[in-house]
Image (tube, rainbow over all chains, first blue to last red; front, side, top):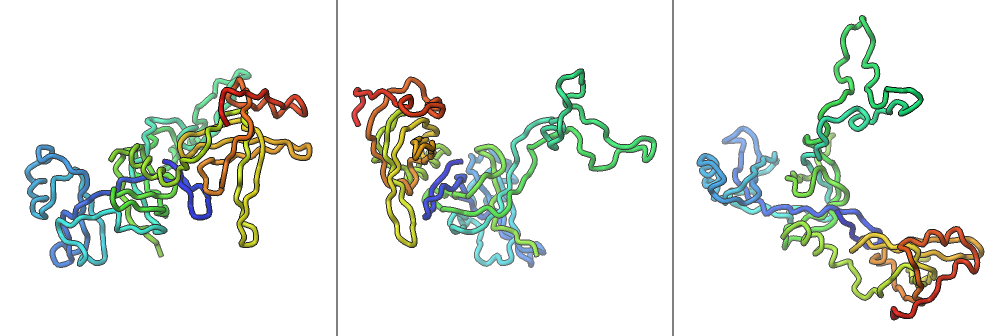
Length: 199
Length: 120
């Protein structure tokens, strides 16, 4: 992350994202697949890195070998054709986007870190420092309620940050400049799509 | 283009190249542009640099002055477009990076010795 200045002189915290170049690897239409979608690929690799079936699928679209494929549901597929490039220019400054990525993994974490529990006293004879405490009633109901907050894996799961604003676009280098933080570590794979407005 | 280069190329548009070298202990005059009823004017703010933090485009300085007996500290992002100008008036001799001890002093005790080995 870094920061840039807007027209009024305010400092805006931004994240710089390498957005492509991506390539259209398949166009799904209602006639052939029952729904309309476009599949795009990113991250060029050598042919050796892929299997024959993968190479065959990409060759059909006339695409170069790519590491990652992802499908996006679109209402109209007319503007897409296999082999076409998808670049950062599809977005425009001011547009709101949803950014999906894998959050930073924190391993098996306790309740203080994972669910913001308070800890017990560290002194005065207390031995209850970071214990979870009671997890429910006794004989009735005789079980722990589903969804009880407990220790477990924190992070390293898919997270979507919604309604982030595109501040700037560098079409030449395929860079997207987005206001605010995005999920995951630097170098992580992201999915960026126009904001899905519900209702 | 790697991540470092991408970020630097973005920042390059905003980074000022004509800034003077500022050290902790210097007395400086900062020209702050203010919007007032549709008009823009430059308001000078003069004081001692008591701290520097951040690097690159995030670089910021804390400038302290005593105004009408009240200590005032303002933090400026030196690359911000609202900072119209920065002029070094006097180089001060400071033996530490943060001069927070000046907050506890009044009057003559807040003076810093002038140093002459750095040009203005």
